Structure formats: C-alpha cells, structure tokens
Length: 276
Image 1 (tube, rainbow, N blue to C red):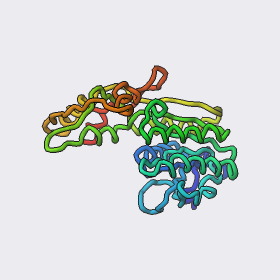
Image 2 (tube, one colour):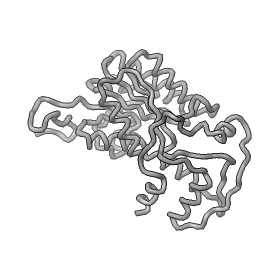
Image 3 (cartoon, rainbow, N blue to C red):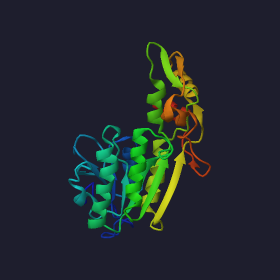
Image 4 (cartoon, rainbow, N blue to C red):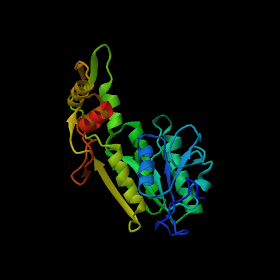
C-alpha cells in the first residue's frame, strides 16, 4: 500500500512512473505552507525542510534540517526535481537568508546538481537600505554566483503581512508614514506561480516579479481593515519619511515595476474571506 508521502503516479493507474518530489524550505511559513498545499493539489509530492518535525502540519514529508548549520541538507535535496526556497528569518538573516542560501546551493551542487532552485525574494530589496532587504539582496547574489539553474522570484508583501502592519493600533491610534503604499499579494496565488516555475523544465536562469492587482496607501488599507472587521477607523499619526530607509519606502521602492505580473485576490477579497 502506498504511503501518503509517496510521490503520486505521473499517469494514474500506472505504477512505477512517478513525479519526483519538490523540496520546500520554510514550508510551515505563510508562503511556504501555501506552496506545499499547491504542490499536493498539483499531484506532486512535497518534502518540507524543518528544524522541528511534528511541530507544524504541512501535509508533506518532513525532513529534519537547519539552514543555519547545514544539518540535514544533503538528505533533503536528494532526489528532488526542484527546491522552492521560502525560508527566511529577519532576526537571523545572516545565518539563514545569506549563509543558509549559500549552504543550500552547495548541497545542491554536491548531491543534486540537476535540480532547479526557485528562490523567493522581495521587490525593492536592491533599492532599500533596510538591513533585512540588504540581506535578501545578498541572498540573491549567493544564488546567482552559484552557477546553478535557478529562478529568482521577487514579490510584494503578502496580505497576511500587510494586515499585521496596518491593523496594529495603540489606544485607538494607528501609526503610518507619509507616502507609504503597498501592492499586497495573495500568498495562495503567489504559491501557484512558484510551483509553476518549479515544474517548468524549460527554465534555466530567470528572474520574475509578482504583485497584487492594486496599489493602496497604508491609510486606505487601515480604513478598509477596520471597516471589514467591524472596528472604528483608527486615527492615524502620520510620521515623516526620515532617513534613507523610510524615504525609499515613501518613494515606492516596495512597489512593482512595469514588467511585474499582477494578479490574485485583492486585499479586500482576502480580508472578507478571513472574516467569513
């Protein structure tokens, strides 16, 4: 009897012909968990790299490993057709985002050189001096300098993150920054794009940008959130864009360029679904 974690048949009813699995790093996170679900919906087995197996429900085969140390990476990359690299840690970006990405590339080079790497990054990481963004840019460099087949996917902020940012209130007040705008993206739709790249054998080296279908100011998002959630609209304390990081955000460094692919549910649609 086949196990739940066995790769499904490429052709139903024809045993022995299977789709190689796809490894997902950060598979318990906001984007990674949606990637795992999309892989399973697509009939592709998912392997999930995790430091603590059993502590999160992923639906994939959990492989114990740690990007910060390199432990378990050889086993994790063995036999996979692609790796969708969603793992990130703003508090430990040097160990996880930069060095961890380099360790992952080294493990692929040694143990599975034919596998493709789909690397998740952030739109604007090269234009903003925010330390976490600089780490994401350095992680991209680790990928491109590895010489391996890869796709770098840059995305705008997912709905879940934007909700946390604009929904925070202090005694009925919200804190905003003049000029701050977002093009929030549906993590489910983004996951579909990542899986498509992982399964596209024609790709060798590419860069793609994805964003949500609309651009809204932080104030508009805060008002919309309060309205849908049945709360009073917060009075907003608008802070000036002081310093290089804030100025770059105010100038729109986090917004998609003209070549970005736009799609997925709007923030209002996503928010209504959460309330339902």
